[in-house]
Amino acid sequence: MNFQRGKKHEDLEMNLVPLIDVLLVIIIFLVVSSTFSRVSELQINLPTAETNPTQEKPLVITVDVDVNGHYRVNNIEVINPTVDTISQSLQHAAGEGKEPTVVINADANSTHQSVVNVMEASRQAGFTHITFATQNKSGS
Figure (cartoon, one colour):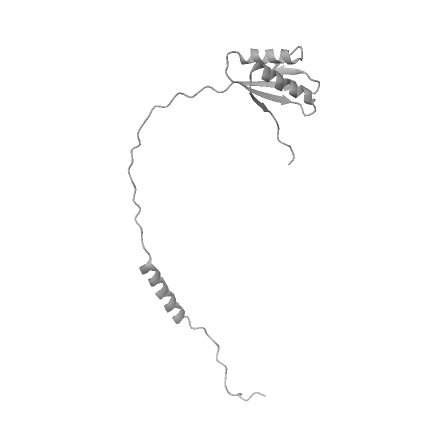
């Protein structure tokens, strides 16, 4: 039953004036309470110094080992694949260079003994810096 037949319902409206008043008070409070810092800049003249000339690049000797056990030292094939011959080839490739780095490029399917022979030849030649060359996996 509708007892209020003659009365029309008024549309409800939200009064935004109090909301705007509160927001203005908050903005004024934030502006007054904030501190402004001054950015100061120092003018500095740095001293100058002479630098040492750049040092030479370290000597790198590459040793390639293929799947058949053939050796190449700096792209020169080693005829006799013994440890002594590889050691002599390493010393010849180093020349007068001090502490060269021996990079072993061994085929993934080469024998373990072939790589050990290069490491032993490096030890006999007195070269202690030995590293292995690898490649990134493709497709990953």
